[in-house]
Length: 136
Image 1 (cartoon, rainbow, N blue to C red):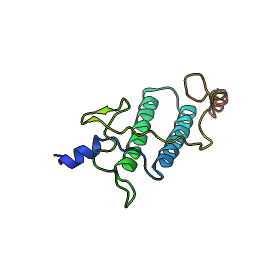
Image 2 (cartoon, one colour):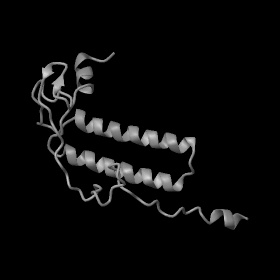
Image 3 (cartoon, rainbow, N blue to C red):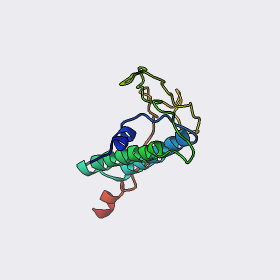
Image 4 (tube, helix red, strand yellow):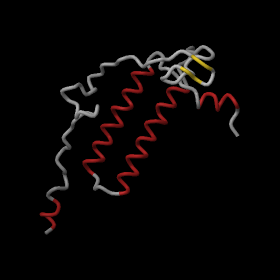
């Protein structure tokens, strides 16, 4: 059974403090790079889909580790960060934190976007492309 404090920590919005926003962005970039590598190396399959889901889950859990365990000496005042994006939380109106805009040189700009907010990328050449011909 979880203590009331453990439940509160798990189900409370934790606005980024200190270097947390940068660390979230680094984890997303690394997970995205790994996902592209898996996508280029693995055949389309249930296993690849599961690997992608687990990578997404791993990224979310790593973010939760950062959010739920802030650096020593950093505290969020009681009641802060409880409001969702609309500004009204369970406790009533509350502060709404927004992540700072970070330019890490990895974000897709309008010229790089596929129109849906995601970077338009070209998959690397499949290293297995010549395998069929070589084995025939």
